[in-house]
Image (cartoon, rainbow, N blue to C red; front, side):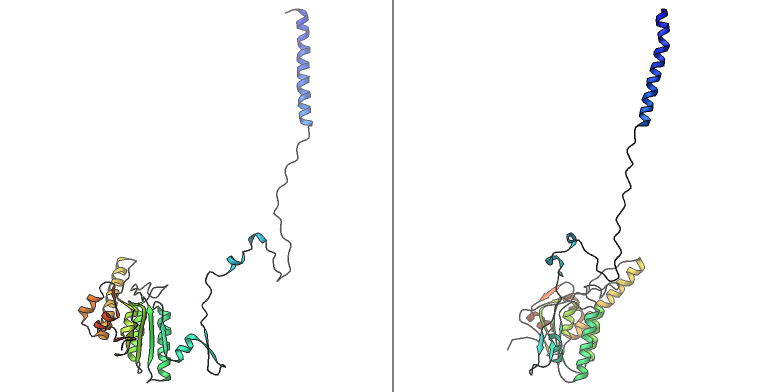
Amino acid sequence: MTLFGASLLPSLQSAYLRQQHQQQQQQYQQPHAPAAAPRLHSVPAAQPFGARRPQKHSHRLSPPQGRRVVDPIVPPVIFSEDGEEAVDLYNHLLRNRIIFIGQRITDVVATQTVASLLALESLNPDEEIRIYINTQGDLSGVLTAAGSGGAGSPYSVIAILDTIKTLRCPVATVGFGLVGGAAALVLAAGTKGRRYSMRNTRIMLQQPNGGAMGSADEVNIQAAELNRTLKVCYKFMSDFTGLPAERVEEECDRENFLSPEQARELGVIDGVVGDA
């Protein structure tokens, strides 16, 4: 290396180091961008007690959506002859000793029916009571589910049958539409000679149905109770129709739809409304 090159090398190194130092100084001296401020949720101002909170229009239901899905059933009102007293339809019928059973016979329906029968008997123990029946009358024999929800209960039906047997006044039964299961027992429980159906009524006989759940011992207990309830219902039907127990069991073994003429032959009813 020449003398000129050896003397120039330290100056170049010092110049390079000086340039690197200046670049670092400039980088540190540049202003940094301010950090983003944390986003805070707005808190609504305090309102006086009882004041209504303003609602957003986007969440407001339109008039068709804001209405109830099913409007309540309001029975029609019947006025007396002088026009002063007004009662609803079912109270008017009850005053005329008429009871309607139009749904599955649950505990609530049985309680209302038994209370109406006892009240009408106390008012006049000699005048006839008429029961109009239109229900499929599902007989659910499960102990844990009997009478719950929409299913019928054999115990509720037996409560009505026992009450009818203790009444002093005659009880007339009239079936219309579909009368099945538990309702067929109530139809046949009327006073002999006062059990009727409309001309196109369908009457269905069936055995109590159900299921079992729980441990093996609990299933056996429920099955035994279901068999006992089955025999009680067959005993009622045998007493009402005069048929032997074996014939009743044969007729109720499966869902058995009957016409009014077939039901009259079996002794479930005594006549058809409208026949001479």
